[in-house]
Amino acid sequence: MNQEDREPQEQDADSKSKSAPPPVLAADTRESEKHARGSTGQCQKSAPLYQIARWDRFKEWASKITIAEAGMLLLTLVIAGSSIIYTIYAHRQWKVMSGQLSETQRARHAADKSFAETLCQMQAQTTAQQQAAQSSRQALRANIDSLHQIQRAFMNYEGLSIGRRLVDRGTNRVTAWQFLIKWENTGSTPARAMVGRSSFQPTVSPLPRGFNFPDLGIVDEGPGVLAPKGTATTTLTVPTGTLNAVKEGKLHLYMWGWTSYRDAFRGTPPRLTEYCIEVTQFIASGDLSDPSIQYNLIPATCAEHNCYDEDCPDYESRIR
Image (tube, rainbow, N blue to C red; front, side, top):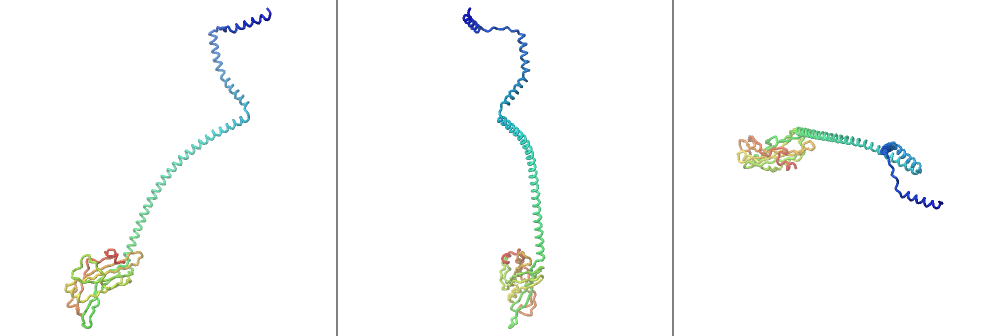
Protein backbone atom coordinates (compact mmCIF):
# COMPACT_ATOMS: atom_id res chain seq x y z
CA MET A 1 0.00 0.00 0.00
CA ASN A 2 1.30 3.25 -0.79
CA GLN A 3 1.33 6.27 1.39
CA GLU A 4 -1.76 7.84 -0.10
CA ASP A 5 -3.83 4.72 0.69
CA ARG A 6 -2.64 4.63 4.33
CA GLU A 7 -3.59 8.17 5.09
CA PRO A 8 -7.33 7.71 4.44
CA GLN A 9 -7.32 4.62 6.56
CA GLU A 10 -5.63 6.32 9.45
CA GLN A 11 -8.13 9.14 9.26
CA ASP A 12 -11.01 6.63 9.40
CA ALA A 13 -9.50 4.95 12.40
CA ASP A 14 -9.05 8.28 14.21
CA SER A 15 -12.63 9.30 13.54
CA LYS A 16 -13.90 6.02 14.88
CA SER A 17 -11.83 6.24 18.00
CA LYS A 18 -13.14 9.80 18.72
CA SER A 19 -16.76 8.86 18.19
CA ALA A 20 -16.62 5.75 20.36
CA PRO A 21 -17.51 6.22 24.13
CA PRO A 22 -14.65 6.24 26.59
CA PRO A 23 -13.91 2.99 28.34
CA VAL A 24 -15.20 2.63 31.94
CA LEU A 25 -12.44 1.72 34.33
CA ALA A 26 -13.29 -0.57 37.17
CA ALA A 27 -12.06 0.70 40.53
CA ASP A 28 -11.52 -1.15 43.69
CA THR A 29 -13.63 0.07 46.62
CA ARG A 30 -10.86 -0.27 49.11
CA GLU A 31 -8.58 1.68 46.88
CA SER A 32 -11.24 4.43 46.60
CA GLU A 33 -11.65 4.75 50.40
CA LYS A 34 -7.90 4.82 50.86
CA HIS A 35 -7.60 7.46 48.22
CA ALA A 36 -10.38 9.50 49.90
CA ARG A 37 -8.68 9.29 53.28
CA GLY A 38 -5.46 10.35 51.69
CA SER A 39 -7.14 13.32 50.03
CA THR A 40 -8.64 14.51 53.39
CA GLY A 41 -5.27 14.38 55.07
CA GLN A 42 -3.68 16.21 52.20
CA CYS A 43 -6.33 19.00 52.50
CA GLN A 44 -5.65 19.28 56.24
CA LYS A 45 -1.90 19.54 55.59
CA SER A 46 -2.35 22.04 52.73
CA ALA A 47 -3.91 24.82 54.99
CA PRO A 48 -0.52 26.36 55.94
CA LEU A 49 0.41 26.17 52.34
CA TYR A 50 -2.68 28.24 51.51
CA GLN A 51 -1.65 30.86 54.05
CA ILE A 52 1.81 30.87 52.57
CA ALA A 53 0.22 31.37 49.20
CA ARG A 54 -1.63 34.43 50.51
CA TRP A 55 1.60 35.81 51.88
CA ASP A 56 3.23 35.16 48.51
CA ARG A 57 0.44 36.97 46.75
CA PHE A 58 0.85 39.90 49.17
CA LYS A 59 4.60 40.01 48.50
CA GLU A 60 3.90 39.83 44.80
CA TRP A 61 1.41 42.70 45.13
CA ALA A 62 3.83 44.70 47.27
CA SER A 63 6.59 44.25 44.73
CA LYS A 64 4.36 45.67 42.01
CA ILE A 65 3.04 48.84 43.75
CA THR A 66 4.46 52.23 42.90
CA ILE A 67 6.10 54.69 45.27
CA ALA A 68 3.01 56.95 45.16
CA GLU A 69 0.78 54.01 46.09
CA ALA A 70 3.17 53.06 48.89
CA GLY A 71 3.21 56.67 50.16
CA MET A 72 -0.58 56.79 50.01
CA LEU A 73 -0.77 53.50 51.90
CA LEU A 74 1.69 54.71 54.50
CA LEU A 75 -0.20 58.00 54.88
CA THR A 76 -3.47 56.12 55.22
CA LEU A 77 -1.94 53.91 57.88
CA VAL A 78 -0.57 56.96 59.69
CA ILE A 79 -3.97 58.67 59.54
CA ALA A 80 -5.70 55.51 60.72
CA GLY A 81 -3.21 55.13 63.57
CA SER A 82 -3.56 58.78 64.48
CA SER A 83 -7.33 58.46 64.43
CA ILE A 84 -7.17 55.43 66.68
CA ILE A 85 -4.78 57.17 69.08
CA TYR A 86 -6.90 60.32 69.08
CA THR A 87 -10.04 58.25 69.65
CA ILE A 88 -8.42 56.53 72.61
CA TYR A 89 -7.16 59.88 73.94
CA ALA A 90 -10.53 61.53 73.38
CA HIS A 91 -12.25 58.64 75.13
CA ARG A 92 -9.94 58.99 78.12
CA GLN A 93 -10.39 62.76 78.12
CA TRP A 94 -14.16 62.27 77.97
CA LYS A 95 -13.97 59.92 80.95
CA VAL A 96 -11.82 62.42 82.84
CA MET A 97 -14.11 65.31 81.90
CA SER A 98 -17.17 63.28 82.81
CA GLY A 99 -15.65 62.63 86.21
CA GLN A 100 -14.72 66.27 86.57
CA LEU A 101 -18.24 67.30 85.49
CA SER A 102 -19.74 65.02 88.12
CA GLU A 103 -17.39 66.44 90.72
CA THR A 104 -18.21 69.96 89.53
CA GLN A 105 -21.93 69.26 89.72
CA ARG A 106 -21.56 67.81 93.19
CA ALA A 107 -19.43 70.77 94.20
CA ARG A 108 -22.01 73.16 92.69
CA HIS A 109 -24.85 71.42 94.52
CA ALA A 110 -22.83 71.59 97.73
CA ALA A 111 -22.04 75.24 97.06
CA ASP A 112 -25.72 75.97 96.33
CA LYS A 113 -26.73 74.23 99.53
CA SER A 114 -24.05 76.05 101.49
CA PHE A 115 -25.06 79.36 99.89
CA ALA A 116 -28.72 78.73 100.69
CA GLU A 117 -27.85 77.87 104.28
CA THR A 118 -25.57 80.91 104.52
CA LEU A 119 -28.29 83.09 103.00
CA CYS A 120 -30.85 81.75 105.48
CA GLN A 121 -28.42 82.40 108.32
CA MET A 122 -27.72 85.91 107.02
CA GLN A 123 -31.44 86.58 106.67
CA ALA A 124 -32.03 85.30 110.18
CA GLN A 125 -29.12 87.41 111.44
CA THR A 126 -30.40 90.41 109.50
CA THR A 127 -33.88 89.94 110.94
CA ALA A 128 -32.43 89.58 114.41
CA GLN A 129 -30.25 92.65 113.87
CA GLN A 130 -33.21 94.62 112.54
CA GLN A 131 -35.27 93.57 115.53
CA ALA A 132 -32.39 94.44 117.84
CA ALA A 133 -31.96 97.79 116.06
CA GLN A 134 -35.70 98.40 116.28
CA SER A 135 -35.64 97.53 119.96
CA SER A 136 -32.63 99.81 120.42
CA ARG A 137 -34.40 102.62 118.59
CA GLN A 138 -37.51 102.08 120.66
CA ALA A 139 -35.46 102.01 123.85
CA LEU A 140 -33.57 105.14 122.75
CA ARG A 141 -36.83 106.82 121.82
CA ALA A 142 -38.30 105.84 125.15
CA ASN A 143 -35.23 107.19 126.95
CA ILE A 144 -35.38 110.42 124.97
CA ASP A 145 -39.10 110.75 125.60
CA SER A 146 -38.52 110.03 129.28
CA LEU A 147 -35.75 112.63 129.36
CA HIS A 148 -37.99 115.11 127.60
CA GLN A 149 -40.82 114.42 130.00
CA ILE A 150 -38.50 114.93 132.96
CA GLN A 151 -36.52 117.89 131.64
CA ARG A 152 -39.09 119.61 129.42
CA ALA A 153 -40.82 122.86 130.24
CA PHE A 154 -44.23 122.22 131.83
CA MET A 155 -46.68 125.06 132.20
CA ASN A 156 -49.30 124.59 134.95
CA TYR A 157 -52.25 126.57 136.18
CA GLU A 158 -51.36 127.13 139.84
CA GLY A 159 -54.39 128.91 141.23
CA LEU A 160 -56.58 131.99 141.49
CA SER A 161 -56.10 134.97 143.78
CA ILE A 162 -57.47 138.51 144.25
CA GLY A 163 -55.30 141.36 143.08
CA ARG A 164 -56.16 145.01 143.19
CA ARG A 165 -59.62 146.43 143.75
CA LEU A 166 -60.39 149.36 141.50
CA VAL A 167 -61.93 152.22 143.56
CA ASP A 168 -63.81 155.21 142.16
CA ARG A 169 -62.24 158.18 143.90
CA GLY A 170 -65.33 160.28 143.57
CA THR A 171 -67.62 157.82 145.33
CA ASN A 172 -64.97 155.84 147.18
CA ARG A 173 -66.65 152.69 146.02
CA VAL A 174 -65.04 149.54 144.48
CA THR A 175 -66.09 149.32 140.84
CA ALA A 176 -64.15 146.20 139.79
CA TRP A 177 -61.99 143.41 141.14
CA GLN A 178 -58.84 142.07 139.52
CA PHE A 179 -58.35 138.30 139.57
CA LEU A 180 -54.83 136.92 139.11
CA ILE A 181 -54.41 133.66 137.19
CA LYS A 182 -51.10 132.15 138.27
CA TRP A 183 -48.94 130.12 135.87
CA GLU A 184 -45.79 128.20 136.80
CA ASN A 185 -43.18 126.42 134.71
CA THR A 186 -42.63 123.32 136.82
CA GLY A 187 -40.16 121.84 134.31
CA SER A 188 -36.36 121.92 134.27
CA THR A 189 -35.94 123.86 131.02
CA PRO A 190 -37.38 127.19 129.83
CA ALA A 191 -40.75 127.53 128.18
CA ARG A 192 -40.28 129.45 124.94
CA ALA A 193 -42.57 131.33 122.53
CA MET A 194 -45.41 131.45 125.04
CA VAL A 195 -48.78 132.68 123.77
CA GLY A 196 -51.98 132.59 125.88
CA ARG A 197 -55.41 133.95 126.47
CA SER A 198 -57.73 134.07 129.53
CA SER A 199 -61.45 134.80 129.60
CA PHE A 200 -64.37 134.93 132.05
CA GLN A 201 -68.13 134.71 131.66
CA PRO A 202 -71.00 134.98 134.16
CA THR A 203 -73.93 132.67 133.43
CA VAL A 204 -77.30 132.03 134.96
CA SER A 205 -76.98 128.27 134.49
CA PRO A 206 -73.93 126.02 134.70
CA LEU A 207 -71.91 125.61 131.50
CA PRO A 208 -73.33 122.83 129.32
CA ARG A 209 -71.35 119.73 128.41
CA GLY A 210 -69.34 120.34 125.22
CA PHE A 211 -69.01 124.10 125.72
CA ASN A 212 -66.45 125.48 123.29
CA PHE A 213 -64.73 127.95 125.68
CA PRO A 214 -64.23 130.85 123.24
CA ASP A 215 -61.60 133.58 123.65
CA LEU A 216 -63.52 136.49 125.20
CA GLY A 217 -60.84 138.32 127.09
CA ILE A 218 -58.81 141.17 125.67
CA VAL A 219 -55.63 140.06 127.40
CA ASP A 220 -53.20 138.48 124.95
CA GLU A 221 -49.98 137.36 126.56
CA GLY A 222 -47.59 137.93 123.67
CA PRO A 223 -44.66 135.60 122.87
CA GLY A 224 -42.52 135.25 125.96
CA VAL A 225 -40.13 133.04 127.88
CA LEU A 226 -40.59 131.61 131.35
CA ALA A 227 -37.60 130.24 133.22
CA PRO A 228 -37.64 126.83 134.95
CA LYS A 229 -39.66 127.01 138.21
CA GLY A 230 -40.64 130.53 137.23
CA THR A 231 -44.16 131.98 137.65
CA ALA A 232 -46.32 134.41 135.69
CA THR A 233 -49.81 135.84 136.12
CA THR A 234 -52.69 136.72 133.87
CA THR A 235 -55.15 139.39 135.06
CA LEU A 236 -58.93 139.30 134.64
CA THR A 237 -61.01 142.33 135.72
CA VAL A 238 -64.57 141.53 136.88
CA PRO A 239 -67.21 144.21 137.66
CA THR A 240 -68.34 144.48 141.29
CA GLY A 241 -72.02 144.06 140.34
CA THR A 242 -71.26 140.66 138.74
CA LEU A 243 -69.44 139.54 141.89
CA ASN A 244 -72.34 140.64 144.13
CA ALA A 245 -74.68 138.52 141.99
CA VAL A 246 -72.30 135.56 142.33
CA LYS A 247 -72.11 136.13 146.13
CA GLU A 248 -75.90 136.13 146.33
CA GLY A 249 -76.09 132.90 144.22
CA LYS A 250 -77.80 134.56 141.29
CA LEU A 251 -74.98 133.92 138.77
CA HIS A 252 -72.21 131.42 138.03
CA LEU A 253 -68.80 132.89 137.30
CA TYR A 254 -66.44 130.87 135.04
CA MET A 255 -62.86 131.69 134.14
CA TRP A 256 -60.87 129.75 131.54
CA GLY A 257 -57.78 130.13 129.44
CA TRP A 258 -54.87 128.45 127.67
CA THR A 259 -51.19 128.89 126.91
CA SER A 260 -49.16 127.35 124.10
CA TYR A 261 -45.37 127.21 124.16
CA ARG A 262 -42.25 125.37 123.00
CA ASP A 263 -39.79 123.48 125.13
CA ALA A 264 -36.01 123.55 124.75
CA PHE A 265 -35.66 120.29 122.80
CA ARG A 266 -35.38 120.30 119.03
CA GLY A 267 -38.02 118.36 117.12
CA THR A 268 -40.55 118.19 119.93
CA PRO A 269 -44.16 119.20 119.20
CA PRO A 270 -45.78 122.40 120.45
CA ARG A 271 -47.05 122.23 124.01
CA LEU A 272 -50.47 123.31 125.30
CA THR A 273 -52.02 123.78 128.74
CA GLU A 274 -55.69 124.66 129.29
CA TYR A 275 -57.61 125.45 132.47
CA CYS A 276 -61.15 126.25 133.59
CA ILE A 277 -62.43 127.20 137.08
CA GLU A 278 -65.73 128.31 138.57
CA VAL A 279 -65.95 130.83 141.43
CA THR A 280 -68.41 128.80 143.44
CA GLN A 281 -68.36 130.91 146.60
CA PHE A 282 -67.54 134.55 147.23
CA ILE A 283 -68.00 135.02 150.95
CA ALA A 284 -68.15 138.62 152.25
CA SER A 285 -69.73 140.40 155.25
CA GLY A 286 -71.37 143.09 153.16
CA ASP A 287 -71.54 144.72 149.78
CA LEU A 288 -68.45 144.09 147.67
CA SER A 289 -68.29 147.76 146.68
CA ASP A 290 -67.10 148.62 150.18
CA PRO A 291 -63.31 149.03 150.07
CA SER A 292 -62.96 147.84 153.66
CA ILE A 293 -65.00 144.67 153.40
CA GLN A 294 -63.53 141.30 154.36
CA TYR A 295 -63.92 138.46 151.84
CA ASN A 296 -63.04 134.87 151.06
CA LEU A 297 -62.86 133.33 147.59
CA ILE A 298 -63.44 129.60 146.90
CA PRO A 299 -62.86 128.41 143.25
CA ALA A 300 -63.58 124.91 141.86
CA THR A 301 -62.23 123.09 138.79
CA CYS A 302 -64.56 122.71 135.82
CA ALA A 303 -65.50 119.28 134.45
CA GLU A 304 -63.94 120.17 131.09
CA HIS A 305 -61.12 122.25 129.60
CA ASN A 306 -58.44 121.14 132.05
CA CYS A 307 -55.85 119.28 129.95
CA TYR A 308 -52.33 119.13 128.55
CA ASP A 309 -50.94 118.88 125.00
CA GLU A 310 -52.61 116.36 122.67
CA ASP A 311 -55.15 115.42 125.32
CA CYS A 312 -56.89 118.70 124.68
CA PRO A 313 -59.72 118.34 122.10
CA ASP A 314 -58.84 121.68 120.47
CA TYR A 315 -55.07 121.06 120.42
CA GLU A 316 -54.68 121.47 116.65
CA SER A 317 -56.51 124.77 116.51
CA ARG A 318 -54.74 126.23 119.56
CA ILE A 319 -51.16 125.58 118.42
CA ARG A 320 -51.54 127.26 115.03
